[in-house]
Amino acid sequence: MEYVLKTENLTKEYSHNRVVDEISLVVKQGDIYGFVGKNGAGKTTFIRLILGLANTTSGSFSLFDGENIFKARRRIGSLVESPALYNNMSAKDNLNMYCAMLGIDNKKVDEILSTVGLKDTGKKKVRDFSLGMKQRLGIGMALVGNPDFLMLDEPINGLDPTGIVEIRELLIKLKEYGKTIFISSHYLGELEKIATVYGIISKGKLIEEITAQELSKKCGKRTVIKTDNAEKAKKIVTSLLKTNNVAVGADGSLYVRENIKDIGVITNELFKSGIVVSEISNEENSAEDYFIKKMEEN
Amino acid sequence: MVKSLIKSDFMKLKKSRSLIICCIVAVCLGAVMALLYVNAWNTMGENIENARELMMQMGIDGETIDSAFSVLPEPYFWSYANIMLSDGSIPTFAAICAGVFIASEYSMGTIKNTISRGFSRTKIYVSKLMVSCVTIIILGIAYVIGTMAVCAIFVRGGSEISAVQMLLSVLSYIFLFAAMASVYLMIAVIMKKTGVAIAVSIVIPAVISSIITIITYSNNEFSQVAKYWLFNTPSFVEKMCIDGQAYIPLLISVFYFAVSTAVGLTVFKRQEIK
Image (cartoon, rainbow over the protein chains, first blue to last red):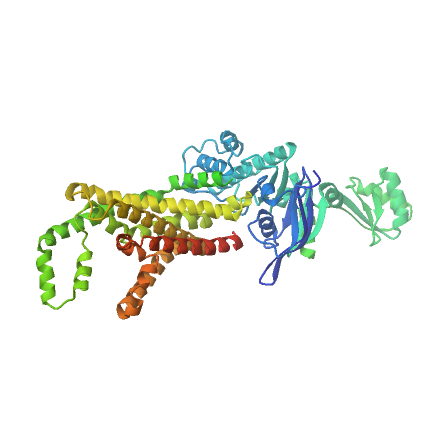
């Protein structure tokens, strides 16, 4: 399969206000696609368009290499905003009812309840559940029917730290089973632990798509050295550290893509070579910082 | 796929507390109303002829006298069942159930579970329509059961109308109730909020019925309008069946059913689900 989701200039307008603005992206099979953006950036609207809950203004999208849209949606499990549950029913009844709706066997209901940590809720009605329990059940509902593609909008909202870890492990396990996951979250740190591709959205526009590998390259630890002769300094630092991760930046600073432990030794060697070091510092740039910076730029 | 949708909708209906409560209230109310009519008949029944004569002496015309006494059913099983089916209580219960059952899908957000799993909106609507129709018929049966329980004790069996006319009347009621269910579904889909849907479903038909009644009484040219308003038609069913006009309630039902389904479905297909 070439792709699970492909959008082309997907746009949604409300009263001439573009909430989703010509988004073109591709989610490949096996990806965990992290959809990052501020509140109101258009993440949920984008998901609602794909799931058929809202109508597109222009642009198009296709699922599973262009499969019939209704059939394709049968292969998607989703959680959009708050979990949609029948409050007068137990967790098990909610799942049983959902199985009946999809016309599938309810044999795996207990397994799903166990997976999302709700197997001991018995006949307790959903109305008496905590926010975290409802969120877990919402994820459980998304898992009914063993879907190939999961679209989860803020799935760890309201979960306690243990719940967050459990859901993270569950998502990693699902990826190992070959599932594709599209996940939007404000918890950038959490997203960073599982996503393989990121899409950064701001004011309805997709401003960057970046793989986890590219992101780590952009965000890793680094040492910045400001000198009066960057090229000469580069040769010395490369030779001392025995690394190729040294580059001269556009601003004339020397960038080493790792933290140098013995800053004093480097400074001393550069000084001996007649190079004046005006500044030397170790920096650490997290993915979270990167996303925030990107979103603020736009 | 529609089969599984209908199955799950009936599962929800089975678990619906509002249906159970409405059924219990319908049985009780049916019994109480029947008791009131039985009591009224016992009090007045023997003196009806005297009352008629008295009213005629007072110069009241025959039609008005007949109309005044038509409120009291004849002392037969069928007469009681007929007046109960046409008194407007069943649509009220149905309006409540449809409001809770359909509009709550929006307020709880569960409708998005169905749509996002690839069910076409037409199929979803058809499924809800079927459940709504069954609900109103269940409520009708519950109401009549309450009435019949009282009648079994106080009223003699039989009927003044023929079995065929009775069957036609029952069929007419079923069709009319199905059309009402369709109207309530349309309102619930448009309103999307449980309370608003129930209020609109009860108030709007009642207001329109009142306006029609006022127009009918104030102008003879419009005397026939009332029977074409879906929520008034049940009052005319028995007479229409006796007069060989059973097709009229059938046509009225089909018209309202078709129009409300078309409007409801069009709205639902364009609707953005939150």
